[in-house]
Amino acid sequence: MLKAVKDESRELDELVYAKSALVDFFKKHNIADANDVDACVDLLADEEARNDYLALFRNFSAAMDKALPKPEALRFARDLKQFSFISQVARNRQTIFWRSRSSR
Image (cartoon, rainbow, N blue to C red):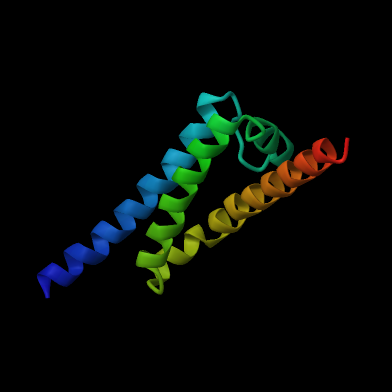
């Protein structure tokens, strides 16, 4: 029983850490709020920054998968949706960029 409680606590701790790593990533690049989607996506135009972000996002997503369906994990659902949206917009923008370059 005690091991199960520790495992649940560890899963939530991993989720908190993974989210803070994403927030810190944007702060390191002078973006104070991940709700500023345009600024976040502009940052991800840089390949190195995009790769770093995607690694952090995958860690957050995996931590969320482990922590669900615990009710405590649901408070991170909006964050997962926001970071997922940023990833998708960045991917779409990158696709448009490469299509426009290849049509020249």
